[in-house]
Amino acid sequence: MIEQGDPDAPAVLLVHGYPDDSGVWDGVADELSSRFRVVRFDVRGHGGSDEPTDGYGLDLLAADIAAVARSTGEERVHLVGHDWGSVQSWRAASLHPELFATFTSISGPDLGHLADWVGRNRHAPWRVLRLLAPSWYIACFKVPKIPELLWSTPAVLRAFHASRRNAVNGLELYRANVGHAPQPRKVAVPVQQIALQHDPYVTAQHLAAAEPWAENLTRRPLFAGHWAPRTHPEHVARMIAEFAERRPSRRELVVVTGAGSGIGRATAEAFAAEGAEVVSVDVDGEAAARTAAATGGHAHQVDVTDAAAVGRLAEKIVDEHGVPDVVMANAGIAVAGPFLDTGEEDWRRVVDVNLWGVVHTLRAFAPHLVNRGEGGRLVVTSSLAGYFPTAALPAYSATKAAVLSLGQSLDIELKKTGVGVTVVCPGVVHTNITRVATFAGLDAREQERQRASMTRWYRLRSFGPEKVAREVVAAVRAGRLIVPVTAEAKLVRVLNRVAPSLVGKLGRIRVPG
Image (tube, rainbow, N blue to C red; front, side, top):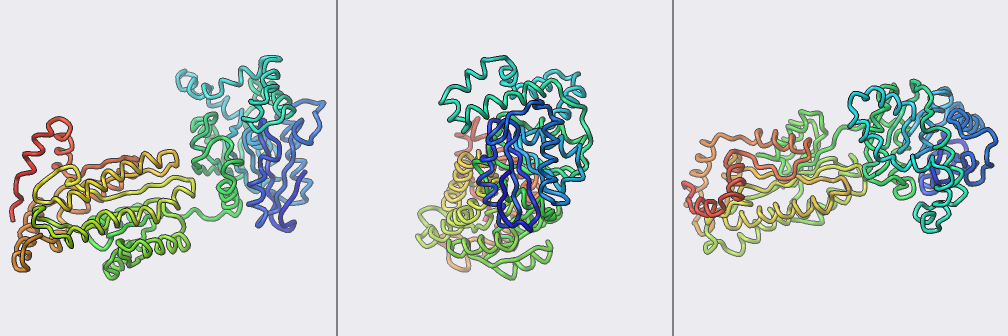
């Protein structure tokens, strides 16, 4: 048995799987040792443990775990199992609930739960086949002699970070228990399943088998592979600690830029209505505060064109509230008018806000979502103009097309991390953006006339920002990438595929003004 950490702190008992020994927990134990008394041991026939004379049956393995738990002298320990360590720990938690305060299961379902699930789904053979298919190798392990020869290959041992002794002795776990699962038992101990999203062996169906049997079950995703204790020790340790300390689950955290009005404010309100904690960000601090008051959330003033300021804001939000689950880079401005009339200053302003503002926001927040390892969503506001070329909006369209392409590229890049991207493409939406739009090449009086005319036209369209907000929330929940909003946005997206020349002709139509 190996111990580290504060001997007076709550005890965490780590049980390894196959073909590992207790060394698989080295990184996790180091992370936990500052707050817990960390205990681990080598299971039967592995590492420094002797080969048993009475076999590898689950009840015997569960009794070993119970004996180690009692040896700590603690009233109850926090039990953690990975792979076969988790399989054994399910049994221990069900047979000896008085010994355990919590149980964290990583990639190791209870065999009795699985047998029960198969029995309940025998009328759906394809579902059963999908459950069993990832475990095809088990049939090979139950064949005599051949697996032992396989584990004599140095390249195979290196690939699995295994010693031959661990690998060969551990085969008896499969031979003694698979096909001989004990009757499932209710588990009263609070259980956390860490759902490894890139695990080729244990799927969501395997995890779901526990639902009828665990009285208090929590499931959290981690975008890592099967050997997460080795590859992502800081993530695994954090999840173990948070569950052991029974920290209350926080509400979904949503950050929205440009939240002072329009689509940003409506989206902040829509997420708040679903129970989210919302951080409203705007260059107008008073407007952000009004949105925060309406949503019961928090307000921050920041200019998204200032990369350093956005970076400081991201750090502040993470420190005070945690890593956001959803970040919406929505802040934007409108510049209209022909290309030949649009000056360099107008170009710089619209690019700084509409493109660089999005880039700064994503650069500030995306690393936090990725490093957390639990997924999340980045939302960027593009526009119908992003895929509808028109002579009336060359500068605005260029920035929105760039944002659209950026969102698509980022979604591809981050796919494996579990962080998704949603690009919102509204059409004509009645917001205050028309009241502050810039019309290139016009004097102040003509600018005001154009703003008033466009505002009246958008008001007649009668499509409010709250409708866009509903689409945003639905798209985030569904994990959609490109979301055209309004009938015209959806129509033009289809026409771009089937009749692109028609889209070019439509782009010549001049908006009334």
